[in-house]
Length: 64
Image (cartoon, rainbow, N blue to C red; front, side):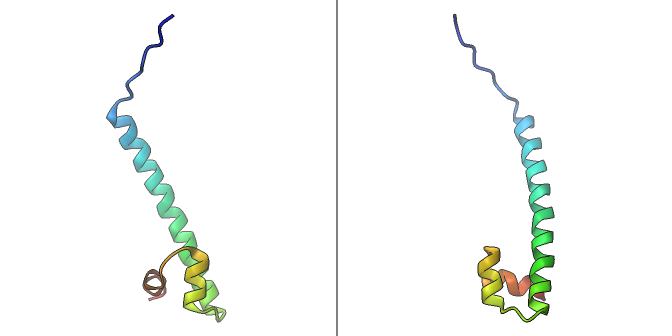
């Protein structure tokens, strides 16, 4: 019995990538909203950035 390899077209991977990037964008938007709420409640930028897994620079950009 021989096992045949199946080639997956590049278009498949391009579509998969597009979908994942869209999902990531949605998650980032939710993370930004949560970060803004925490900051409005008095949370410090460094602490929020650390918990969110982003740099302080990114957090300041989100809060601007």
